[in-house]
Length: 391
Image (cartoon, rainbow, N blue to C red; front, side, top):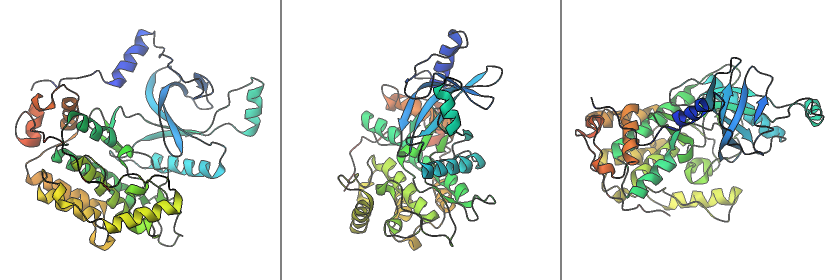
């Protein structure tokens, strides 16, 4: 078999090469305000050196870093820190997220390696005297070089093509499998009925350069219990299920709705709804709720998609929870049956080659025997991008 062509050098390999060329000391492309110092000595056996900021989220920010052990071997990790580390309520939520993700073990959920608790008040005072370092609490996570779904969709639009429907179905099936695991996750003292993610968005679904998909950011995850009070509504309004916007408790079916919207966005290239401007909190939720109830499913927009996949998308995003897929597992199974019925055998390796093709000058002329697994021939006939309706 012809070896897979690397369009660009993987980021992981590039950074490690730079580190080795520098005498096993990684480069210091560091934002001086991102961390107490370039290298923080912690109370654990590990040390961390910040490389660069990865991005900011609603609750915190993430950094790419090297993690060293006691014999000075290192690996790339992502460090997540809060915007407001002094906020006690946020700290509690942050530690719960770390605990949940540390305990969950699934190939489609981002791995959390550990959690470092920040310095105490006394230790912060000692840091002003130069006795020790002062740092905020942070989570140590698996680093995923590659794309998130938002950037993958953007790359398709830049190339002027739709995402291959089989690829959209495969990625959504991996999201659904990860959600099914979380929804059924049980650990004494944490959750008796599973965990609802509540923030399934294009930026929280990461695709590794080797083709693996990981769900990230359980920062507002809700350990579901029918007896508990309804939690405060959180998340990205345009991806929140209508029943949650209307005041009901988030459930597995509300995560399914969000996953269905991601499938639609991958197929059409645009989100169903544009973000709401100049509104916040309850006012924004009410506006989005009205938009959902007013707008019907636009089946005619899926002209390049097989009707069976359109039906799956409709069943995942129907406004009536009773008519929706009742579990994420059901959604995953239907997507996998769809792929199987069309002789599509797609996995991480095919996904990795597909992303290589997208980054080439002309994706339609990119040839690989891996594509035979997807559509029966060595290249892909991409559909030119024509946009999709949004409100």
